[in-house]
Length: 108
Image (cartoon, helix red, strand yellow):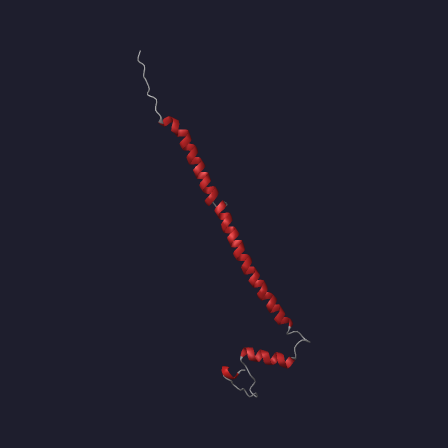
């Protein structure tokens, strides 16, 4: 009767720990860098701060525009003053008007 003797290998003891390390590394990497990972959370927080600052800027511009529009309502501004400001902003005049052009030094 023949018997085979097997030599004990040390590599067999490393298979389960190696697979565990690979398993944990894979999920650890995706927990940090994945779509819903920790790094994505920090990027979303930074984006939230950036967009909040932009929203505050737009809101302040809107409030300023609403204030300026409120000044143009009836009772707060005369019609001829409104006409004058509109023509000045659009750089227009009627054909029967005399236009005097001043240099920027003479505006004061």
